[in-house]
Amino acid sequence: MANSLDLNNLAENAEFRTRVKVNLVSISNQIVAEGNDTTNTAKRKPYAAAILNTPDNFVEKFSLSLVVQAAISQGVLLAEPLGQTGGIEQSTTEFDSIDILIQGQLSAVFNNVAGI
Image (cartoon, rainbow, N blue to C red; front, top):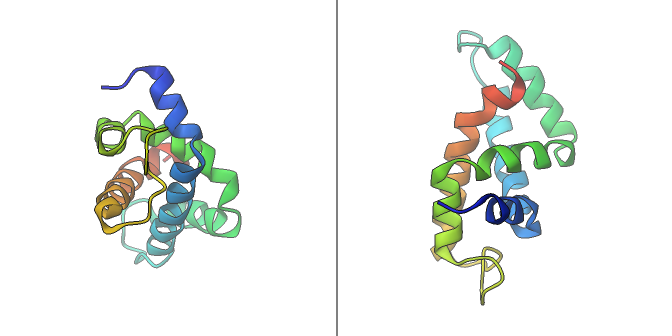
């Protein structure tokens, strides 16, 4: 696992934050469309709607929550460490797996970050 400095660098990386933002909007759209019988939907929907209205206000909070998840830190940092050629910002299909990791982990931490 990466050390706390590596994790902080990843959380502050502009390209990582862009990926978090786009995937956070995607997850929030799914949550807003949830049926009313979904667990905690009454609390989840307003938080997701707030994210959709101002996604930039939530990126830092979610980025920090994501990088401490082992799947994210290992998946992203091992794919190509920050500062090396290509890196997380490279837009190729080989990095689709990073978006899949981010979406999965966003779903996992959404309730925690939302305070649910």
